[in-house]
Amino acid sequence: MNKVFLTGRLTRDPELRSLASGKAVTQFSLATNEYAGGKERTEYHNIVTWDRLAEICGQFLGKAQQVAIEGRIQTRSWDDDRGTRHWKTEIVASNVEMLSGRKKKDYEAQSAAEALEAHATAKPGDEDDEPSFAPPREGSPSDPLPVEAAA
Image: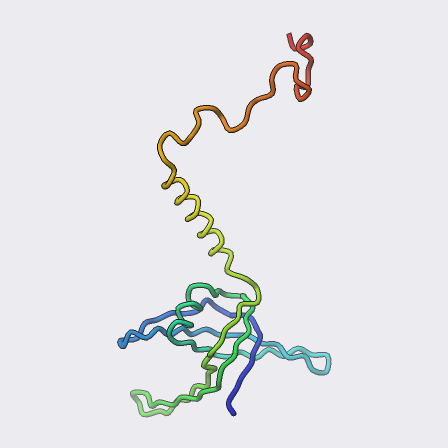
């Protein structure tokens, strides 16, 4: 059985690409930590996602986000132009779970988009000519000086 479960942080933003066939693929690196004998050791893993999962990872994941990955180990080999053989071992993810929420810039972008949408959908005349707050009247308890003293 070829099954991998990893929990770690992204070391960089995912790279989302579309292949000539139209398939989406995302690649990113995941750092995991192991604690043994009072020492910490970090391992770096190459992660690959395909199709809809790739699109979701490209849109919602970012550097330093904590994720849980489920997938399988795959080793690819190829020969370069000089005939040198290369190998690359990577995790092909079948499931990715965000453990630390969305990227901060996504929240900011969503808030800005919602504000623009609300402004664009407001009908002319919906806004009041009056301010949204009323200043305190003279002599009211919120006025720091009594009317007589203010005069």
